[in-house]
Length: 217
Image 1 (cartoon, rainbow, N blue to C red):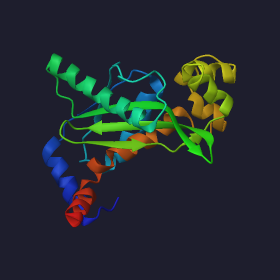
Image 2 (cartoon, rainbow, N blue to C red):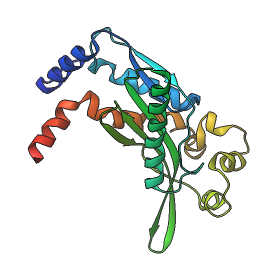
Image 3 (tube, rainbow, N blue to C red):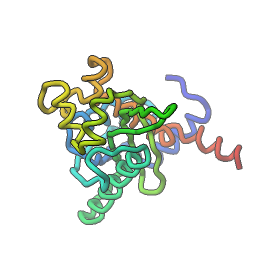
Image 4 (cartoon, rainbow, N blue to C red):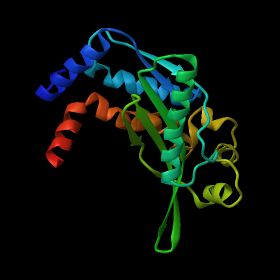
């Protein structure tokens, strides 16, 4: 892969930082789709890190600090960020050093269009190195109103509602609502993978972000 001048400078900076060691990435969940999504995303961006560096992924179950099924973009973002804060506390308590902390949060975003409610399924990620943090989001998938009503009016968790809707059990640990609604063209894991790639962009392409900040300054 041919790197640009900016990418090469960033590559050298990262090499100096990590010096051929494992990069430890802590994820605020132990659910397989989330951990696999992070693993896939890291393998995709691995060429932008020094040769010989590998990623070690640690899954830790932590609280999101938000409702079981967030119902707004703000709540989704807050949940993802709070998971990394909980990870930071765990690291401090155990005197461990984790290079990146990743929080993932899935749920709903509700908007009004011409007085009609439209509800979208979204998957959000927040990534921090302890100094700076950035958000990333999957695409949005409009969900059926009957499913939205189960969650928003009846207060049923999305994981339970989608099981009923699909006539299956444990959907969120498999394809998720994404897979059920898209005939598995997009599953939960792939949606989170996009969010993680986007949230990591300011780290693996830091040269572009720093130059943009300088230009705006």
